[in-house]
Amino acid sequence: MISGIVLTHGPIAPAIIEAAGAIVGNGEKIFSLSTSGFSLRGVIEKLEALFLSEKLNQGVIIMTSLKGGTCWNSAVAVSKKIPDVEVVSGVNLNMFISFVTKRGQSGLSELTEIILQDAIKGINRSQQGT
Image (spheres, rainbow, N blue to C red):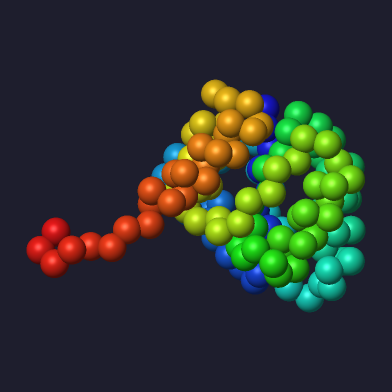
């Protein structure tokens, strides 16, 4: 089963996981990490330790908050060292719920595309009266 890591600034990652859990449940091999209080090198070390301790080897998607920041840069650095790791930015509740509910139905690359599309579908603007 494909594993998931939500990597964000502050308490966003555990909040997303908790909210999704209340809606659809979470399952196993789902982890949250925060960059708070850590340098880029420190976050890379935390990610590498997680991969080793949890034996994450069947594909992993790391969902980060922002492209270009510590979350993104550390995840990309780890993905260059470890095979079968995808990194996406812009994690939101739609993306994560899509990951949880569809991760057993697709391969790593296909699932990555699916959750990106579902994240975008979840962003809307209400029109007056609707």
